[in-house]
Length: 239
Image 1 (cartoon, rainbow, N blue to C red):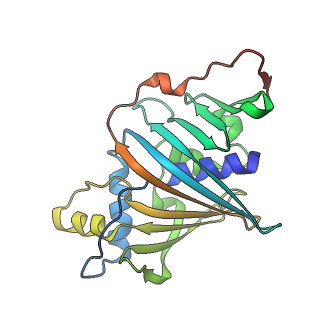
Image 2 (cartoon, rainbow, N blue to C red):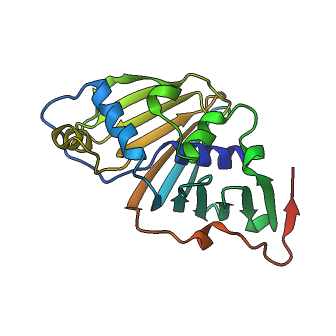
């Protein structure tokens, strides 16, 4: 269960998905694609989206599926806050920027830890992206995938972390060609993190893919979304 939750969080910290795009007429350079990703991040304040998740467990060849709604907020002076409301499996992951709650209603249990505890053990890249300080070109060695563009014309990237962690050995991103072309034409970013698809590979060979839909960016998310009140009769577990 912890691996499932960790994969979910790792992927969110790295990518936010925008709407599908049409293929552009010409190919942009790798620098252009990275620029569209990096320059959009500074303008991101909050996001709300539906998500679907698939995790392939390498050791047993079994796939786990999940879906739900996610909220993310990046206050100017503190660590980012987030909330995953899973419809399937039924669970919640909530953080106010200092503390994290993993609520498993079927087990009548909530696991509570600090953000620092959650990311200790070398997961500094994940924490960096969650707090809004990460940069693709700083933290990763980036290249185009073997097939530079997919069947829709969108760009496919391979990212290898310069400091791999147990939860992040490799990342694949599919980036909207339309968003990149708009960035090149206008010189600014309108699509904040315009990633169509992403796959996180961990050190054990497991793969987690998350797709987002109905993305709403910078619409204003109240801080109350990022607090969690332990229900009566639920056991609290701390590390």
